[in-house]
Image 1 (cartoon, rainbow, N blue to C red):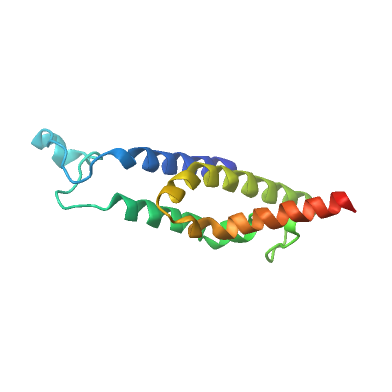
Image 2: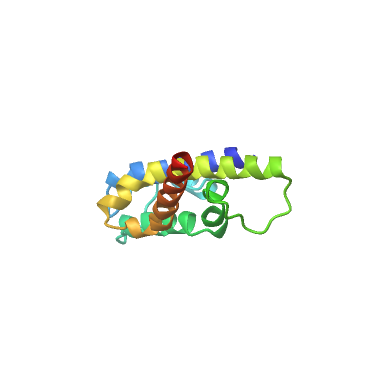
Length: 142
């Protein structure tokens, strides 16, 4: 279930990032009046200016600053588990799933964040990955 939800989240982020090139200052043509009364027009954009960069940053901030994602990313590799009541097998599965899916989210959004000069949003993840790699190298060296 967690993997499916994270996949949906990644798909939503990819959709948001792919729509980055669309102009949001021009409203879409209005469809038939009777259809608008019954259905929500998902393509309708208000006439006022919308800063797409601010929207992207707000969404990515909500995802990457979420406590669950932050605390469980590389928890197994760094041996820094948040409080839990999981048995060792479930713990390993949860850590693996969250780390893998968080890496997918990072891959999806890192280039855009770099272009926006906003890598500070994912700096904790980059630091954790660096620590995990250094720890693994030191263990292999020993």
